[in-house]
Image 1 (cartoon, one colour):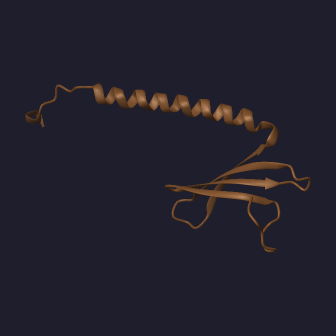
Image 2 (image 1 turned 120 degrees about the horizontal axis):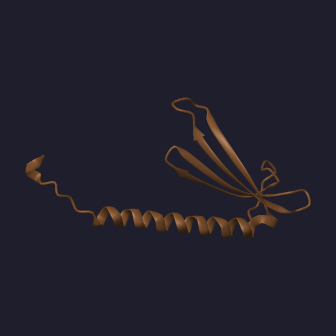
Length: 102
């Protein structure tokens, strides 16, 4: 948990921004008035060459943390396996094309 100055929003407990190309992802932990915690995941993407941004936000409540994490881990595992299989298929492919044919 971080310390807040009086100018900081009291519901914000933690924030992490990850820049990924044209997108920025924000992972935030926030507190309710009753001191329950929830997570927001925000994707921010610039609209073309303009200065405006498109934002999509997901709210994740404490009772769903474990199920969400389990689903995300399973999904990423499958995606990584599929990616590894695709990469190895390209590596194992040989071509009958010869330099002279170019």
